[in-house]
Image (cartoon, rainbow, N blue to C red; front, side):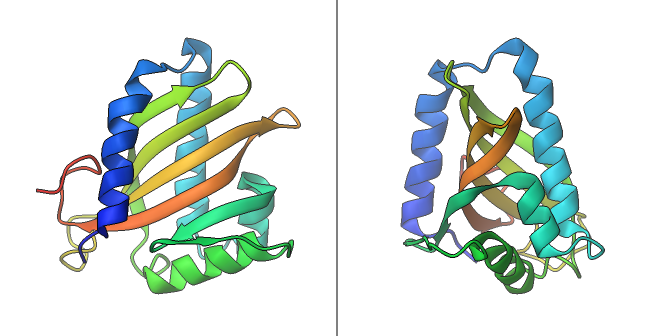
Length: 164
């Protein structure tokens, strides 16, 4: 599956702009742990979507699905979107096994943005290996929370920044 033009543009912009706003050194490991934990819990069939949503999402997040934003007044939007993404991208039957933060930027106001590649084992169905995530994060109540998430597949690409 090829990424829509919109997502390629977002990934290119993120990789072009974000390196100029480096994350504070002390927060890099914390954000890496956040990305790893989210990838593992999102892929874990033992974790219910509402449990993952409470742990990782702000109360009013926005999701980008295709070129349409997913925004709702319902407090159930995050669990619903997690359930839909798990189903659509076969996450539980083909879980993600590794991740790489390609770009990380952090503001001094408690905000951060990450471009993160989630990868599956090489033996998975061809074309489903890499998923690119653009997370907009905020420190809320002392913890990092996702306030915006854009997820797109890059098939057999080596990373999220380039289509090979």
